[in-house]
Length: 94
Image (cartoon, rainbow, N blue to C red; front, side):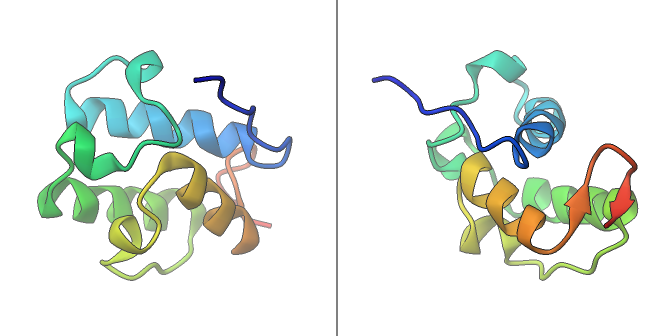
């Protein structure tokens, strides 16, 4: 399968999310396909809540605990966070 690259505005978030998720999922970042549901990699509620905390700390935006289930892939999460104004270039909301 050929993956389409993330949109330019989402690329930094893809990298940020993948790096954080790799730690929680005990995987190499390059092994995480942005179009595969994170549950298939073993994401559980502890991982999802930890990710929510990281997002809130890094980008200063409040997210629901169900974020990772409502937006189940890296691509979905990145698109949602860009729409919410997350910008990893400066670590806070635009």
